[in-house]
Amino acid sequence: MKKLFLALGALALLSAGPARAADAVADFYKGKTVTIYIGLAAGGLYSTFGQILSRHMTRHIPGNPQVIVQHQPGAGGLIAANNVYNTLAKDGTILFTPNGGMTRRVVLGEPSARFDPRKWNWLGGWSEPINDCTVWSNSPATTLEQAKTTELIIGAVDTGSATYTNPSIVNFFLGTKLKIVPGYGGGSQVRLAMERGEVHGFCGQFEGWKSVKPEWLAAGRLAHLVQLASKRSPDMPNTPLLSEFARNEEEKAIFEFVQSSLEDRSMVMAPDVPKDRVAAMRKAYMETLRDKEFLAEANGQQFEISPIEADDIVRYVEKAYTIKPDAIAKIRKAQGLD
Image 1 (cartoon, rainbow, N blue to C red):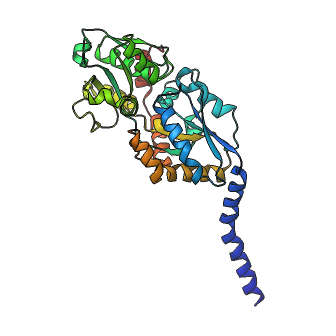
Image 2: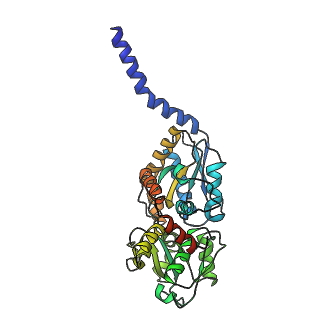
Image 3: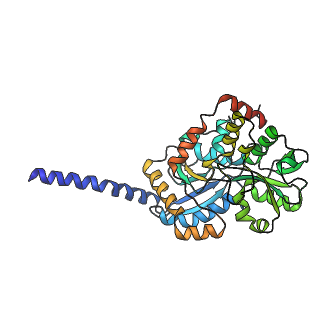
């Protein structure tokens, strides 16, 4: 009988373990503020998504902390990334959404990136990004072929962001005449520059047009030159992928590396955050992406939510580090890094 009581007691302790862990996480987050850092200016795609997420995620985090958004633009998001990774609170109250192909930038040797994407605590992603180079439909050139002989002015965030490096790749390998003008704080500022007539277009994320300027799409005011993703978007069935312009296997490998950024719409926590808090936040994030109230608001803003599990992003990041050195050298040259 004594052995039976001991066994039952041990079983009770084991079953109580997860409950105690959950209580500890809830106790930690109760009354605290969780901050989502956005590395771009307010008003753009990431900012809008972060604001929507903040209004719903609190319901799914143990302890129901307040969730807010803070913008820290600069260096195409790298200032915020470096701060979250190296200096900001690592207790689990800071979240960060990478942007601009940050893993690719680190693999290519971005000197101002002081973090290792393989060490982030990945929570998951809300969908695969579709990047595209888009101009006014009445621009001097409305196809890549035309852009080989006619200059188009393209606004960009800075020389390290995908808004600059993507059109640089197109120019280098395909011979287009895209005049890239960096210095804008985010996609919202580039679109304003388009309205002012400062630039013809922008190489950003297609969903930014859908969520911020759907009336431009509906009115046929935009022409899409090329898209960068793993496959053609249903929204742009007639716009070619960058990889479709590859003339050999090396270019195909380079273009596929450049056009894919599965981690670009993800959420991360810094290294060294306690594992139980990472697990709880990962669960909360993915639950929020499937929350009916969240989806209603996100879909109302033209966001397409197709959750990507953290493990899939981890595999993508690891694969990015397998690109050959010769290909890296050519990409760096194309981007003006060497």
